[in-house]
Structure formats: C-alpha cells, structure tokens
Image (cartoon, one colour):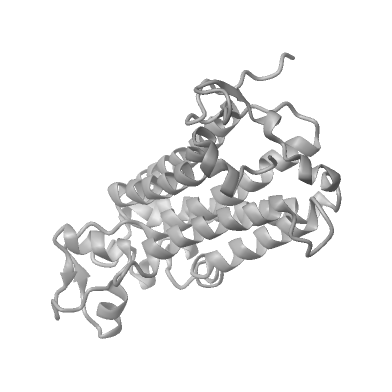
Length: 293
C-alpha cells in the first residue's frame, strides 16, 4: 500500500486527522437521531429550562444529571485529562521526570489548551465565556439581573434562562479527548514506524511547504524510544472511550442541536489554534512544538 499523501497545507488536517475529527459531529448526529427514534426518549418530558429530562421520568440512567459517570468523570473531566496526559508525557521519550525539550513543549501545549478550557468554563476576567455568551444573547438570572453567572443564579434557586446555552459538556468532552488524541497518536505512529503525514511551513525557505519529519529535534534523538509507551497510550485510550460514550449520551439526552454544535465549534477552534497554526508559523512552532516533533 502506498504511503498516505501529506496534507497540502499546514493549516489543513491530514487524512487521518480528518477521519478522526469527523467522529465528533457524527457522534452528535447519532445521539440526536437516537433521541428522535427511541420511543422512551421521545415520549419522556423534557425541561427546556434545565436542558434535560426531569430525573423522575428520565428515559435512561444516563439521562439523569446525577448519574455517577457525570458526577465523577465529566464534572471533573479536566482532572482525568491532566492525569492521562501526565502519565503519557513522563512514561515515554526519556527518563521519568526528566524535562526534555519535547516534554517542555508538551507542557506548553497543555497549558494553552487548559487556559482555553478555563476561559470558556471557569473564568474570563469575570464570568466565563459560556456565561458571557448566554447573557449577550439575551439570557440572565430571572430573579436577579445583577447575577452574571449560571452557577451563582442556580445556587440562589434562580432560573438561568433566555439565552444561548453553549454546551459545556460537549465542549469539554471534545476538547479533552481530542487533545489527548492529538498528543498521543503521532508519537504512537512514529514509534510504530508509520510515515509522517503532517506538513509545515519552512522556517528557512520562504513559503515552501515540507514534511514535518524533517523538523525532528536532534537534541531529543537520544531519548527517542526510551520508556514504555503502553501506560500513557492505554490511559489516554480509556479516557477517550469514556469521553466518547458520555458525548453520545449528552447528544441523546441534553441540550438543543445548536447548543451542542457551538460547544463542538469552540472546542475545534482551540484545537486549530494549538495544533494547526504553529504548523504554518515557524517562530510559534519553535516555542510550543508539535507532538512527536
């Protein structure tokens, strides 16, 4: 079989990346179709204010916000993402706890993705972007208009309604699982001897596009292959599998299609910023690097 053709532009996903990213909208579509075709889901009452089914009439265990997977996995999803990435980063590519140049750049990429997650869901010079989007589209706390966050409104027993509620679950599940995949897959393929598909803009030859393999850091060559890839790969695979399942459940039982789509879009924007723009901008690439390069 001939090797896959490289991507024609640094800003475009490779064939493998295109297939992978297509999983996410396909999952949202599958979940939405299930909610329409399943008699239990279709006939169950739905509370538009909470964007969920009332717990007493939920059509599935996963349709309840208090299900254990939602409480102990999704609600603290960034903890599991951090754990999986740490295991992967420090179990392969050098002695444990040695900060090789690749590991430093991996930590920088992790910091950028974490900042994006934090700004969207936790804090952005005040309310997070999710809440700012909600209020900018006409929503707010019905009982007290001075309250600027959904969490504060619900804590006082208020109704947070009237705006566009970007799906935080979709955003977090897509961002965390795709971040792990983008970090792990190219290293795993490199270890397996697979051809490099990614291309980058040359730092020394104007607008020339070249294969990313030519930029493997010589300073890290002595650490290539050191350690065991399996613990990090397997941990990331478990987190990805759980994330996919909960994304499917979110698509089936929570939020409107528009809210799920905007959650997906904001996650994709973060991934494009961290993983594709550096391929086209050599100075930025020198700082945060690329997985496996």
